[in-house]
Amino acid sequence: MAANSGIFTGDNTQSGWQVNRKDNTGFGSVTGSQNVSAYNVNIVDDSDFMDAFFYRIEGEEEQGQEHDSQDL
Image (tube, rainbow, N blue to C red; front, side, top):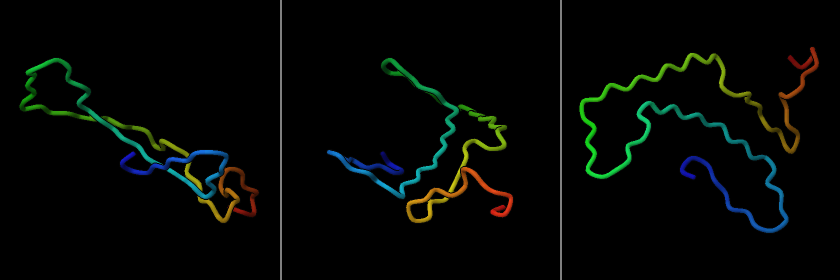
């Protein structure tokens, strides 16, 4: 909800919306009571070349999902 959100009710369409986000967390979670976590070193090894397919929206047509050789 912090990065991009919407609340829609009824019969409606939200055209032109695009949300791209990626989070890498290296700590996990701490449960219980009176827990202390000190002097931590957290390493996230994300070796992905690409995590998601991105495209742009022009008007109401989505561009980028399928291309002819002339479009590239």
